Amino acid sequence: MTVLKMLTRIVPAAMALLALTGCATTEISSTWKDPAYHGHPNRIMVIGMTKQITNRRVFEDEFVRLIKSRGTDAIASYTVLPGKLDTDHAAITAAMKRRGTDAVLITRLLEIRTESTYVPGTVDPLPMRYTSWSSRYRFGYDMMYSPGYMAEEQYAVVETSLYDTTDDRLLWSAKSRTALKGADHQQIKSIVKALVTSMTEEQILKPAQ
Image (cartoon, rainbow, N blue to C red):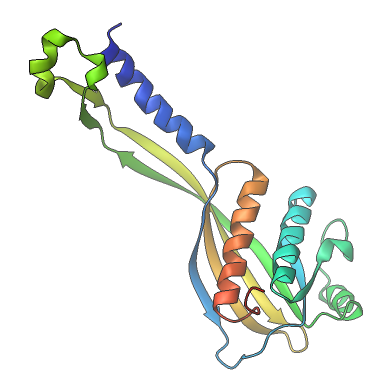
């Protein structure tokens, strides 16, 4: 096998590997804030709506950690509502009152979306180190070709909403889009970081200390 053919095979494979092992990234696609709300919550209960108990705990703990770093108190719901989340609204409300929370942050998965993108092939000059002295004058004609391919990527579309627990009023809401790359905990951290940053920028949370 010639060097040129070998490179033609290796380059696309390396690019695909990088795509699979990349870190998860989150984009905030839209937000809404109650224009009449100008304060900050004192204590937020965080609820991650997921059937996977481990992911729920990691998600809620990460949210609590970052919210507290902004100077606002927070509590993970699994510490007072362990196991499967109770669908009884009154029971959840009672748990929040016992813990003295004045806001609840609820996150739920809306959908898993698959998007296909065509990555066109490229033609690049063959690196000098792979040419012999006799072909130097032909360098402009020696090219390395990487064929095009279809790349599929999955995204998690998540909705996050903050409510005032005293009157059930929606204070803030956001939709986010996260590339499903890497381990679950990487995806969770990406989502939480983006959402807390957005809440801070929109003055729902206090500025970072």
